[in-house]
Image (cartoon, rainbow, N blue to C red; front, side, top):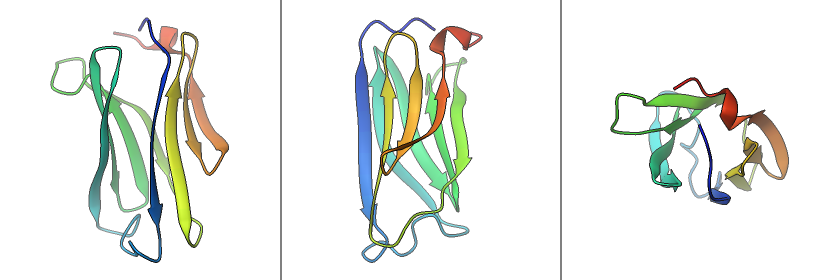
Length: 105
């Protein structure tokens, strides 16, 4: 996958205001986004956070899927991308990084 434009999408949640976040069996659609013109979404089912790209096409796939253990209070999650990497970040710590050129499309 070739990325032409850098970007970041993020969301935050407060465990005190949203105590069901990342708890089994709850499903939450956190945010929809686009990398260039390719639609993506960030969802969670229980503690599993999924970042999918190419939503609504036959190329749809999950670029990140990881367990999230939120800290008490406010948590911030971001997906950032540039020409050579796509990173999943939580509370300032990189959880996973991929090279978009490795995406087999």
